[in-house]
Image 1 (cartoon, rainbow over the protein chains, first blue to last red):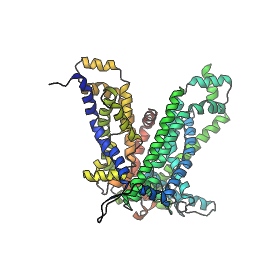
Image 2: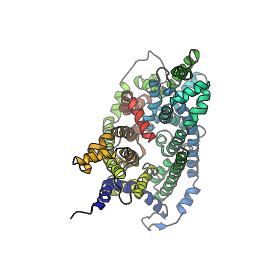
Image 3: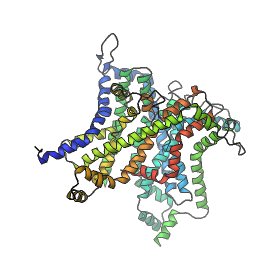
Image 4: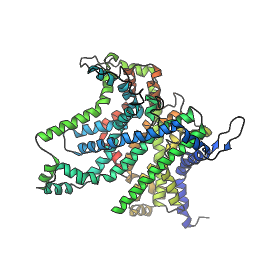
Length: 294
Length: 280
C-alpha cells in the first residue's frame, strides 16, 4: 500500500536530512549537552560515584587566577589584533582594487599568509623572536642595540602573538573588503568627481560608510577567531611564561588533557561556548537591523 | 567624458602616482618578507640563516635532512586522505540536507534548520573534550575517520548549498519531472550542475581549512599512520627535537608546498572562492 501523497514530502525531507542530522546530533548537540551536564558534577573516582555539585565547578573556575589571566589575555589579544588588522585589510583591498601596476602580485603577497597553517606560520615567526640568534635580535645587534627574550618576557609575549596574528589574518579580511569595494557602483565615483571631491573625502564620505556592513561581519569573524585560534601557543609559548600568553581554548586543552580535570574543562567549555553564541547573536541582531534600514 | 572624470579621481598622475606605487610595493614586500625569509633560510646553509649575502651558496641539504628526519611523505598522505574524505563526505551529506531544506516542506523544517545553524556558533573546534569521549566510545580514536567525522555535516556547507538551490527556477525541475526524472535524478541532473560554482568555492575553502586544522587532530591522533602534516610539523619543529633552524624552515616549506603551489597557480580562484563563500 502506498503512503498518502501528502506524507511523501515529510518522509523524503527527513530521509535526506538524516545523515546530517545523525552527525550533527553526535558531534555537536550531544557534546554540548554533555559538557553542560558534566560541568554540574564532580567526576566519579575509583572509590566514590560522581556527585551533583550544582555550580561549584563554575565557582572554582571563577576563583582560578589562571582562568582570569586567560580571559584577560583573550580580550587583550582581540583588542590588539582586530583594529590594526581591519585598517590594514582596508588598505590592502584599496590597493588590490586599484589600477596600480603589479596589483595581482601584491594581492598574492597579502593573501598567502592566510592560507598557511598557523603551525607553519608559528614555526617561521618563532625564529624571528628567538633571543640572541633570532632575526630581530640580530638586526638589533647590527645597529648596536641589546637583544631581548621576546617570547620569554611577560611584558612582550602577547605583543609578539598579536603582530603575528595580524600578519596572518589581515589578508583574509582583505577578501571581504575587496568584494565590497567591487560592488560599489562606479556612478558614485563619477558623481564625486563632478563635485570635485578629493580622494580622501571620497573615501571618508562614500567608501568607508559603504564598507560598514563588511566591517561588522569582519569584526565578528575576527572576534570568534581570537577565541578559536590557539595553535601558535603549542609552538611558541605553551601559554607561558607564567601564563602570560595563556588563552582560553589552550587552557581548556590543558585542563582536559594535561590535568585530566574533565569537570573543570567542561565548565570552561560551556563558558567559551556562551561567549561564541553571544557573539553570533550580536552579529545576527546587528545584521537584522541592517536589513531593516534598506 | 565620464570615463575621463572617473580616471581623474581614480588615478593621480606624475609624482603622486609614483609615490603611491612605491608605497604599495614596499607594503607588499614587507608582507611577503617573513615567507621570503623562510625561503632564504631553507635554501642556504645554516651559517647564512641571519647573514644575508647574495653570494651565499644555494643548497638542498636542509630539505634532504628534514625529509630524512620526519616522515613527511606519510604525514602528507594522511592529510591528503583527510581532506579528500572530508570533502566527499561534506559534498554528499550537505547536498542531501540542503536539497531537503530548499525543496521539501517537511514537518519540523524550521526547527531542524535552526539546529543545523547552531553549529555555526558551537564550533567543533571547541568541543575537543566531549568529542574525544564520543570518538573513544565509537572506537575511532587515532583514525583519520575520527579526525574528519565531526566536520562532515557542515552547517556552513548546508547553508551555502541551500541558498544556491533556492535560486534554481522551479520550471527547470518541473521540466525534468515531465521527462520522467525522479527526485534523485532531478537533484543530480538539475540542481547539482547548476550549483557548480558553489561547490568549487566551498571545496576550496574546505580543503584549505582542513589542510590547516591542528588542535582536534592533535587530540585525536597519536601515531605516525594517522597524524596530519600540521601535527607532524609541530612535533618536528618542537625545540626538544633538536634540529636546527634551517632544517625546520625546510620542513615547514615542505609541508606547505602543496598550498603554495596551489595558490600560485589558482590565486584568482582562491580569492574568488573566499569572497563568494564569505559574502553569502
